[in-house]
Amino acid sequence: MTIRIAFKALSRNKLRTVLTMLGMIIGVAAVIAMVALGTGAKTQIEEAIKAQGTNLITITPGSFSAGGARGGAGTSTRLSESDANALRDMPQIAAVVESSSSSQQLIYGSMNWRTNVEGTNVDLPAIRSWQMMYGSFFTPEDVKAAAKVIVLGANVSDYLFGENVDPTDTIIRVQKHQFKVLGVMARKGAATGGQNQDDQTFSPYTTVMKKLSGNTFLNRIYASARSADAVADTKAAVENQMRIQHGIETGGNDDFMVQTLDDVVALRTQQTDTMTSLLAGVAFVSLVVGGIGIMNIMLVSVTERTREIGLRLAIGARGSDVLFQFLIEAVVISLVGGAIGIAMGYAVAWFVRTYNQWPTVIPPDAVFTAVVFSAFVGIFFGFYPARKAASLDPIEALRFE
Image (cartoon, rainbow, N blue to C red; front, side, top):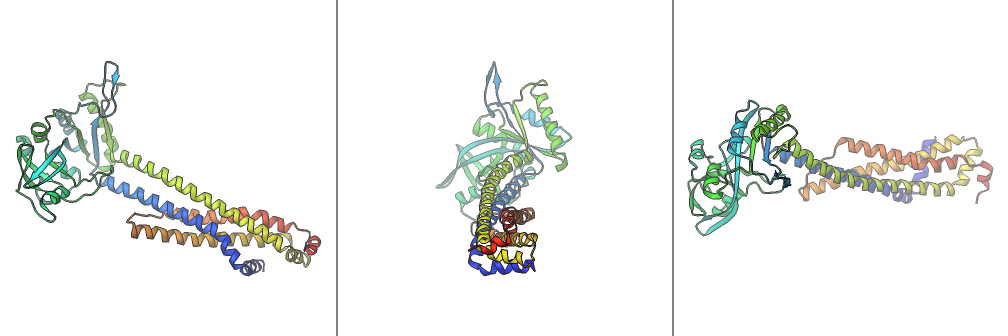
């Protein structure tokens, strides 16, 4: 009986009921949409990072320290071929790749393109989970002989030779040297830092160091753990081995940095989580504003229906019945508004995913939280008006004009 009366009261003022719901609708829709965008971005980052390699561990130069003078991260140049060979001998390591990069102008006929030439070794395709689109990668003999051979990234090949063209066995010029193109890597897209992985080329690291850059050190070393479960332990073993290689005593400052994909994932997703939390916080504020709107309208409703309440109390209704009626009205407004808001949130997420090509993921717990919070808002902000209605004196209420 009380529930039927509550629904009848809401249906008498349809426009006001709908306008009261708007705060909840907008708030819940904003929460769902913001969480969907944030979670989608987080998932995209994780997938992009995982696509960079198999159980990848990256060793880069760290800080330089000498005579009390200290440089920042990356100022040390103490990564060498002997470091890579020492890591290669470790039982925990499946593969090791040396890396020495140099920015160069590539020339073919009247076309030219400036890009990064990454000196590496034959294990790069395996350790980076990278397939060939045309041709083949260079061989251990090419690395040993510092052969003038090169493998192009897909974009570099497009710029120099045109799209869907196999440039294998073509000769291009880098500085004064003639390089033979062995093949083209498959398209891989953007890396975690935003750089285009297809806009680079690969040569034996010995070739880059001896004939292009003149460097005697490596820019980085890639290592691959034997299994995903062993990455953390392998990272610790790599750090110990590098300290031995560089003669760093216990408690000394490392002149290198060791990172796993999990480290990079944690850093990137932490940034995304912070932004998502901020946006969700703003959306939750709109939910609170919507709750205040519900309280305001319910108080107005109590004032307008004072005689009705007095009449119900006079003919035998208990205060708890009146309290329950107004609570039901507040909760119905919140839950219906929340349900519409969830549908709108899904619609916004679909629109962004379809037309802006932005990945969106709506976790079930976000929907559950939105529903629970909607009910809580209805009870919390509806309780005071309901209690006020229940505490009215029947005689005074019947006299109210």
